[in-house]
Image 1 (cartoon, helix red, strand yellow):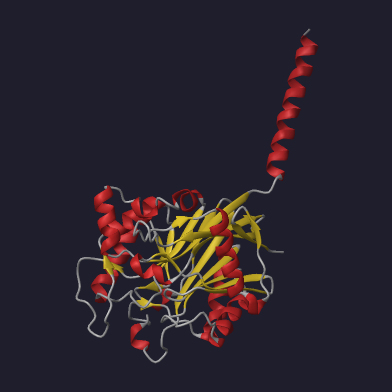
Image 2 (cartoon, rainbow, N blue to C red):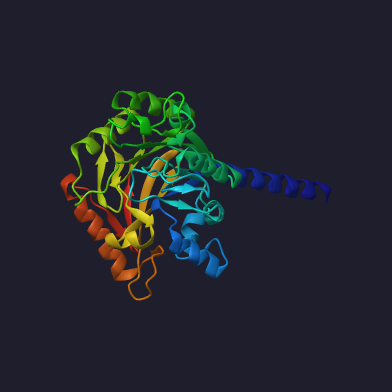
Length: 351
């Protein structure tokens, strides 16, 4: 009887070890969600106050952006009640401190501040923004209190994968006083000759590098400029795994270059009534396996609802989702990029 018990115990221990081995041998998958431009205007602030919830603007997309290991977006404007509006701009953007709480509660881990509006309320507004984000545990890239910080990659963990982020605002190179320098705060200007060393540094600290590039002013059409292509490919050649571009209120196509995706402009995500200028928005969900970018899922969203007057993002399904993916594929025709479509989601599978 004693020997039988010993045999049972040994067999049980062997089964536990086998199970553990199988579990560890399976590759762990993780996800990074990326959204387009975010701008909290007065209307969105009113929604938060009316609903009494900081999550109100994100209800239509909340499961997607909350369930990711890392969620990233581009923030337009500043979070402050101080400072004076910059005198030479017709449109300035700022929001209250509740904005940072709303972003944190919705699941945002990191945002890019590399935009034309990051200094709308001067140094005070900029510093208040950094302080508000830090208070709620949100990291930022693409801007800083000096050039070194603005160009420093931020590395976050998605399960066992280290994901590095870089951000830039490609405004006018003749307006150097706007950008961060050795002793001045502001956004990071992408200098073509220096991009490679930034990406190499980020790659040395992480498994996957994501670069966000704000291309500056809105364009009248969806034509992708030669400089956009030049800079994006420079980043990929240097080691970036994906480049996410932003043109204000503009959607542009997708290119697969050397096996790596370039989204030339992901467009808006939460942008008040300005979002009505684009027919669709998209959320990207990056699926990571064995510390490599395996798949990009393109989830279509509506940005405005003419029936309700809402300008909040909401996941769309069925025929409308199919049309949204086809629309993006048409924008990508010059590159021959094709998406698989599964249950209303565009799929790009990478090597």
